[in-house]
Length: 255
Image (cartoon, rainbow, N blue to C red):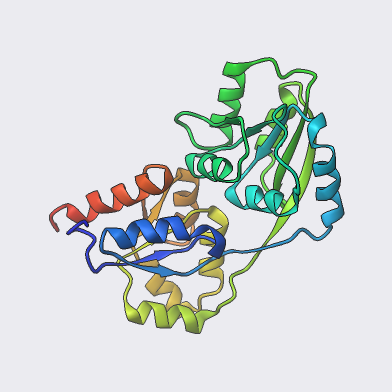
């Protein structure tokens, strides 16, 4: 247990299905982990496209997953073992661990820079992708940098919407109640979650949210929070890195 985190209320804003490991780790350190999912994950609008890609999975040399949600969505509809001839590629340690839990192997992941650019650099290091087939599993919509980067490396790319991202299932009143209960810090795991948080807040609640302390694992998320007048601490990647960053932050003497 960490004396620095003991009794501190920390919001965990990940989708409900992905919050267990982090909330458990925070609880073991004595924190009060509050589940406040800022994204709802739903099946794709057209599951037939996902099923068709999974039926042809053996034909792909590489399957790229943009998030743990993409891994879970594929595992839900893949009713056979993962083909050993298809490498899986992920962008961060959380996704790599989730892939291993689901029996997906081999797994390619960036060793340091945990984002699409880091994954592309790792694929460059491995080499040999030109002319081979790849499938990218992501949410509906999404950024274009990763698919463009994969195609630029000569991969014949199929992009599949494996899930939909929906706004959180609560409102400004729920936010006010959580703020009234106290919040020592909020872990924000995606730029979209940051956008949803401030979008559902009324003016008075938005001002209170701007004064909160946020923790985020990527500069892009910190920039999204800054657009709404909030500041954040950059954490190390992965659940262990997030918990360690929080412990170190709250262990520092108050100014």
